[in-house]
Image (cartoon, rainbow over all chains, first blue to last red; front, side, top):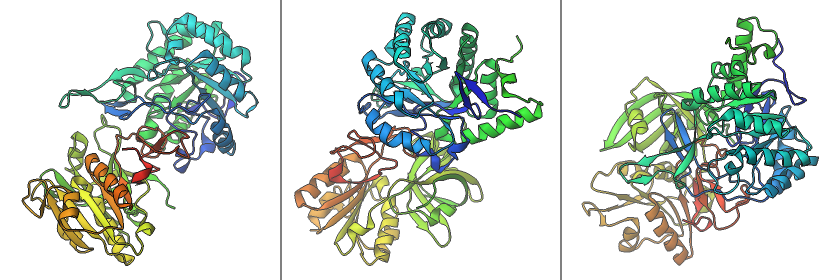
Amino acid sequence: MNTEITIAGVTFQNPVMTASGTFGSGMEYGEFVDLNRLGAVVTKGVANVPWEGNKTPRVAEVYGGMLNAIGLQNPGIDVFLERDIPFLKKFDTKIIVNVCGKTVEDYLEVVERLGEAPVDMLEINVSCPNVKEGAIAFGQKADCLYDITKQIKRVAKQPVIMKLSPNVTDIGEMARAAEAAGADGVSLINTLTGMKIDIHKRRFVLANKTGGMSGPAIKPVAVRMVYQAAHAVKIPVIGMGGIATAEDAIEFLLAGASAVAVGAMNFVNPYATIEIIEGIEAYMKQYGIKDLSELIGAVEE
Amino acid sequence: MSTKRKEKARVISQNRLAPGIYDLRLFTEMAKEAEAGQFVGVYTKDASKLLPRPISICEADKEQGVLRLVYRIAGEGTAEISTLQEGQQVELLGVLGSGFPLCKAQGKQTVLMGGGIGIPPMLELAKELKEMGTEPVIIAGYRDGELFLKEDLERYGKVLVATEDGSVGTKGNVLTAVQEQKVNAEVIMACGPMPMLRAIKSYAVQQGIKAYISLEERMACGVGACLGCVCTTTAKDPHSHVKNARICTDGPVFEAREVDI
């Protein structure tokens, strides 16, 4: 039974990754799970300089999920290269670094700094709904997405995955723009923009008013968008959005994802990633599937 | 150093101590690792509520492996937790956070201040301080005459009571009691609502003493990964490299001068 999957020339031991922003750089969840078993650790977004993030409250629970408006707090690329990358290199897992920025120049600086670093892949965050400048502004218009992808591809030394926002009219169009600009893959979905109001205080629960919704409640939307994106482009798709169990992960694979990422459910069940890896293996055994690639996009039309 | 984990605990008992205040005792190995000021995440069974509820540790019987949580019903999640009965199981994430630095109290006149639902963690703290030979003075600030945990606290130190309505002890808050009862503190350890913690910080600064305060914020992961529950720090935090520390892991206890509250 082969659970390996190759995306843009990088071979992952299994298709289960962590979704950016939900797993730090692996240090915290290393207490709960063996990082050596993960397909990849996708890091929290890193910018060229440290970012303070938003005011608190930054998180709120909602029915079947949560809202977050962290605002991409991060220690900046210098600390990241000195501390986080050496930590992750100790493990037998692939490293995908999520890159964020306020301007195109910010993104390019981080991508260039990572050029010589021992990381396997870059994921470009053009879809965070919680920062005022940059980020999602690049990810909601196809021509902006095309432009930034093109510029990043020009300087990137590693394969580039563009992380797409679900807060768009036509996800296929966005995926095609990334592909046309040379992206090596796309990942989706980032969080859905949401809002929660405390009716007793008549105030927004989040200091940022809006936040990104994640958790099991968004999964059907994510499966649909992964299916649409996978049909719109030939480059690989990494699927995420509310994955809690192996069954959820397999839905994404059947919808066309070559790999999957576990996000908010890490907060709920710190062992979720490992349970999903084991569950996918059990499913493959149950149905006599010899190679994971047999599942990708295998939903009957 | 204990390992954080998610595991099931068995309910020994659940009692109502005062209106909306419950006392939950659990059999769990986590009790053996728990320190005063730490907390656990308590999961609900309702699948629509995903995140564990952070609840402070009131008492940890290390020999018997009994963890005692005294908490207030703050919403539907804690309301569900309050219905747990003897023999039932509940999932915990723990043990979380960094507790009170007992060593800072060694040989010093130590005053513990608990306000409202900030009183429970003072019990384990008072117990551990007394065990190491530093019997504290404990000031408990209540809303009214529902003096939950007062008798428990009296086992480990002198207890002064302040009530907002003046029904028992000093009328006012914990700091009113400090003034009225002429309490002398060389170090303060406190947990309670933010206005109380702010007042304690300014008192400690004015007196030139250290105050260790336990903070709260809306949390998601509880283990330092999501960066949801940060507080503003006065100096650059060594982990985040910005002026933000994670309450769930760097705290919840901070020296008052280290945080901008």
